[in-house]
Image 1 (cartoon, rainbow over the protein chains, first blue to last red):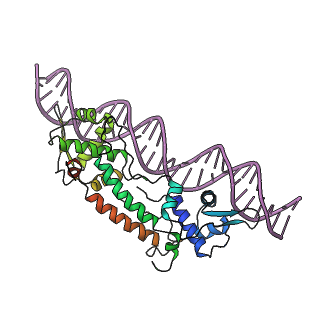
Image 2: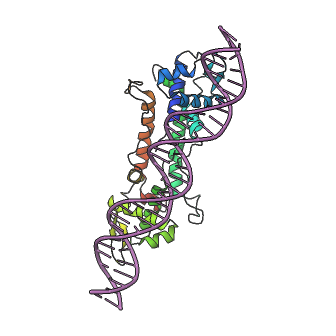
Image 3: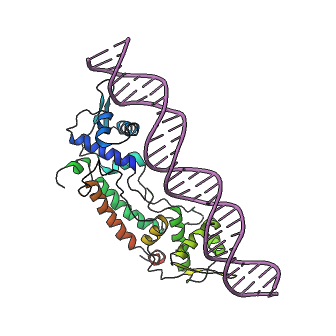
Length: 135
Length: 135
DNA sequence: TTTAAAGATACCATATTAGTATCATTTGTC
DNA sequence: GACAAATGATACTAATATGGTATCTTTAAA
């Protein structure tokens, strides 16, 4: 059960890299040289981050990407949601006919409690916290 | 990111059902009537639980399955491991050449911390705790 | 005008998940 | 002993998700 898929991971590393380099404009080529991520895949990832307003893109020659919001405000949680959709540990597989007491379902309750903790932690991990010297 | 896949979920429900019914011998037919799980799929699941020594099987006419260990000792953690393999939230996708400071990797550290908490919680959720009236 | 960048989108390969099918073996009942 | 009803073992299939590629369009600096 991967918490973080490859695209999310790549996104994290790319954003860390951009945050570190004083938020200069970076092209995909530069980034993929540094990070050794397949170029077209990284492009797709950056395009998604652009659509989500986490990055800003500049087209044309000498174009590239840069952070659109402060690295402090980009959290692991938001990146996981961006690439993997809604955060949900627990999706009941049983139809209501079989499990009518859905509100009382203990498995659900217990898993949801764990999920709430994890979400809270992930919202607390920012790109800034990952690139900071200490922490 | 599913914490619990469908087969694990089915296993949990089946075990709860068996724990509730005073640990009598139950056949797959009986169980799948109660739980509305596809018969051959449930069979496969019970066979796995048998191999893992969580259930005991009795062959032949009037055969079936029953718990092999106390429902208190069957945890969600052990079931997740049985059906989904090693518990690992975080599997570094970067080769060492790119990310040489693997020991210092902050993402890893932070994710591992969350993982440890989740594992601890999952080890604390037993089948008994799921079927108990209160808790 | 050329060129180097991103935007959009369709495609493909592989792995995982969910489930099925089939044949062999065991054991109680007639 | 034959049959029926159960599990054991194992191979197969369909659908979906993941990881990645290819290609054509648009933009803007030189």
